[in-house]
Length: 246
Image (cartoon, rainbow, N blue to C red; front, side):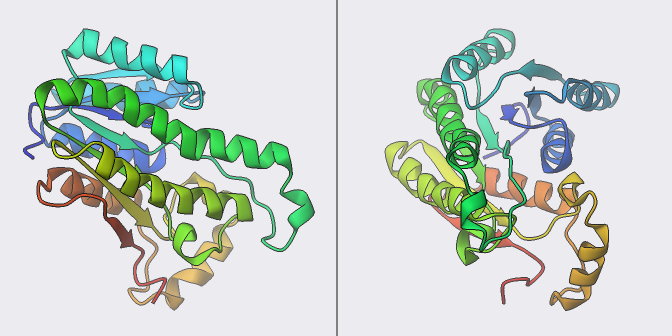
């Protein structure tokens, strides 16, 4: 799919991979709705950077874990730009809990991570698909993680939520065919603010990767855009991890 002229929604679009993706989509000619929950200043800065380069963008607040807010967000975007053609389901949260500390994986933690990471992606896909179906075209990329493949990660509930996103991707690909492609990009370690306070751990990891580098948000953003462009691919979980899982 040609991205130029399309309207894209990027959840969690003000920071990290979301910001890089918003900027990359705009550079390729897309109009971008930059969603945020709490990071308003960062979302507005991202929008300003797009506008300064001649692009079109809008910051829109919604907690993706709340279905009503998501539906209202989709209506606001479509009301402003006419439709939604592309969705990047990037918004995610985590808790840093040792993988073997089962007692720390409380019901509250499970609910919080699943509400945002899994249900939130479903709510956004459902809301955006309304507009994609009307035009019989659309593309969705969900952000998974190698944690969903390996079972390791910042916490057990996080890894399981990412595995659920991988499953959600396959189910949505079936549910939204034949006009909407749904794929998942599963990054490994990426140099974002999630590593705040653990920078030394990140530096020690890099030499052990096959490519001996931690991916930058821009690396993932370019691949997300490439996945959105593919018209003969759906239901795929694509790993981008500098060889971390080999």
